[in-house]
Length: 159
Image (cartoon, rainbow, N blue to C red; front, side, top):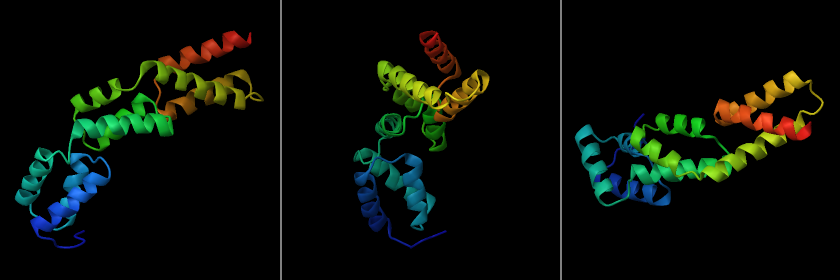
């Protein structure tokens, strides 16, 4: 899978640009370095240099990733946490990133998405409507108890 063989110095320059363009996880940077045909010792050395020079910061990456996915894609905490784990982000940084999401905005987004889905299923029978709305919100990564609570609130307003 080696794309090109670079010297450690060339790889460092390329990775600085790669990290400056957008926040990256340590795993992404490591994968990129191995893709340049570098050995483990060189990769570890370059990673620590990038961390020292603040090109790589896992906490900053996690917070930006979580905030971006929540704001742009309207993902819930469960999905964000799963994706961060896939990117090999530490549990501490995942927790920190999820706590950076504004609680009020989170509930507001959950209510808006649930209400919109509920309304779009107006022709469905009640049980199907509830199941499809719940399934949709679970796919978006929201927590089951919160989804049920919001659906109950929507039903009470309609009755």
